[in-house]
Amino acid sequence: MMAWYQMLSFFFTNGLRIFWGLYLVKTVLQIPVNTKKTGSISAGAAVFITALSCFLSSQFILLGAEIIILTLVAHYLFTAKTKMCLFLIFFYEIAVALWEFIISAGLGVVFRSESFLDVQSLEYAMAVWIVRLLMLGIVLAAMKAKKSKHRQSPRIVVGVAITGLLGVVTLSGQHTITVSEDQLTTWLIFSVIILFAILFFYLNRQYEIEKTIAQLEKDRNALLERDYQTLRDTYAANAKLFHDFHNHIDILHRYLSKGGTAEAISYLEDLQSPMQAITQTVWVGDEAVDYLINSKIAFAASRQVRVSTNIEFPRHTNIHSVDLVAILGNLLDNALDATENAEESLRFINLTIRRINDMLIIKVENGCSVAPTVADGDLQTSKTDKALHGWGLKSVRTAAEHYDGTVETEYSNHTFRAVVTLSFEAVKA
Image (tube, rainbow, N blue to C red):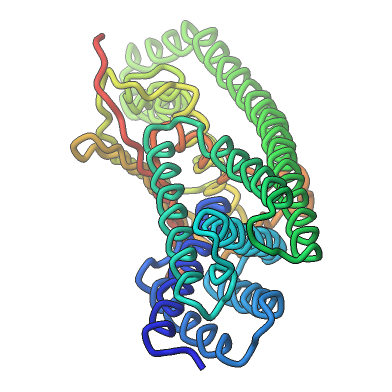
């Protein structure tokens, strides 16, 4: 039976191990999670594992139990991507246990004492705390690399895996303390598997990124083709109106010269609608964005969808036109799709663009007859062709990430709301 201070040490080390494991899953899968809730659950799981360690003497059985518990906790917290959670947690737990073995055996070699390999000893607890400090250093280095936007995290992880493999190989050649050949062989196999798992993970991630980029490019081309067709239709309507302009002048002159004021007014009212469609402009200051907004407003009007705008856009920023078009185009397209079959009272779209200090807020609200479907944390398209649709918000998130932005969605009272927040910097004109 362990002493109270050993149990306290086990509790804190297990708690840190679980919390950092969940942090790893959250960071890699980019899943938002409540830190306080994660800390509370980690503490509860640490109590359970610490109690379990009092009855289980086999390190590998205890490791298996920890993997199962941590997977269940991750599934409860994140409720998405269970297979990937299991993959990350399994190799995370194996890697931590591997380094606990390497550090404890390494200290045993340095101090010529096999007590460092005894799980119940204070020496082993000291080795575990050294591993936790190393883990803290890796977490801080990864956070610093992420904050500075340097892609150092993969190198750190691969470096840790290679160092672990070299550590086991080195221990297998020492004769200072006695280490079971089966134990060395097991950890050597695990260290190789960990290294290949990391390489497989990054290759698979690169494939998924390239696949997403290819789909976004395909989606962007479809969007450009549709907007090009809209532009052609608008130019055709403009050309027809101005081509007939002299005819309209002749008719108005004839009405007025004969005193037909009422007829002239009626004729002007008939002309007013197409003229408004041409001259209606929302000045953002960017020609492409202005055209996009106006074309979407004109398209909405043709579908009897009411559009209201409230735009305050900062001039001369580092926000690129192509990113604004991607964000606004997809948000407005999604809103138009949602209102297509909605009842009269829900056929509306509200577009708001506001500046708050160095933040740009883009909000699109639209009526929606039914709540959107959510699966694995992502909104699902209602269209039958799933392969060609459902990329709207993914494209928005991709564009928003260029400016440390966020994308939030909400549905309530038959209103769907998408809010994009971007950080921008002023640039010289």
